[in-house]
Every structure is written in C-alpha cells, then in structure tokens.
Image (cartoon, rainbow, N blue to C red; front, side, top):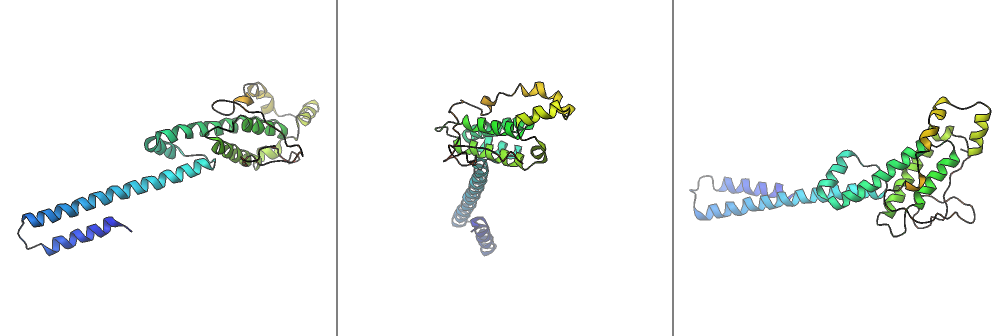
Length: 220
C-alpha cells in the first residue's frame, strides 16, 4: 500500500474542506500533522526501496554473478562493509576468468578451477559466494567456443606442437601463462588442500557442501 498517495489525497481533501475557512491555530496544527505524516511516509518508502535494492544486489552476489559498476557503486554507498566483500568476490571472479583465457587445454582449465576452489577455506566468510563465483565463471567458459576448441590434455597440446598444429597466438602467449600463479586466484588468504574424489566422479564447483572433487568432461 502506498501511504504517500493516501496521505496526499487526505491533504488535498483537507485543503478543499478548509478552502473558505480563515486560518486558525487548529487548522494550522492539523496541516502540520498531515505534512509530517507525508514526510515520514516518504522517508519510509525510500528506505523500503533501498532495502529491496540492497537485497537484490546481495542475492546476485551470493549467486556468484558479476555485478555491474552501478551495483558496486550503490553497494559502496549503502553498505560499505558488504561492498568490501563484494570487491574481493568480484576480483576473484575476474582472476579466474583471466586465467581460463590462457588455458591451453581442457585439462589445464580443470586445474585452474580446482586451484581456485582449493584456495577457499572452510571458515572463509565469503566461502559460498566465492565458490558460486568460480562455478559461474567455469560454467560460462565451458559453454564457450574457446573451450570447445581446446585439446583435451596437455599431452595433446605437445602432440599438436610437434605436428606443427599450433596457432601463432598460442606461441605468443606462452610467456604470459607463466605469470599466472594458480595458487593466488582467490583474493585473500590461500589455504586448504584440494581433495579429489575417491570414486573419480566429477563434483559441481557450486556445491559447497561436497567439494570432494571437481572436473570437466575433457572429451568436449
């Protein structure tokens, strides 16, 4: 219910009812009360809108999605503490994206994601959001044409090089790959040892409760 509209109608009705009445203390007092009600309702409406927008941004962040610059700025102004968490999560997301761009094989892409997940501690306050962010980046990358073009394994990459099937772009980026330290993909304290599932099954990187293994179908 929009209380501001109701109070506005009430105020208009007050003016009509007292249009021909000479001002007096009683009328002025009632007018002040109505004006204050409108001011308070406007303030309440603004606060409600603020909380709804904050909740929407925070839900998007928890889901690991990329926030727009406008959303980041709004978060910075409305909730500085949450903004600091958002900066860390978004930076981690960007680091994983950049590392995956330089992956030479599906196997290497798997190692990049595994390293990112292993860097998240169990008691990290942003654990779920970080895992969701890595998962979102991984899902998008695996659906891309860039991923589909990659050889399955590092051994396949060597075979392609030996057979002369290697792009100039790949050769030029070899030195750049050395700059990516997979252990530093998560912004903050790196920790934890990644454990591969005993049964060899792949586990979704978005599953924070059962991260015993992670992998892609390298057959593409």
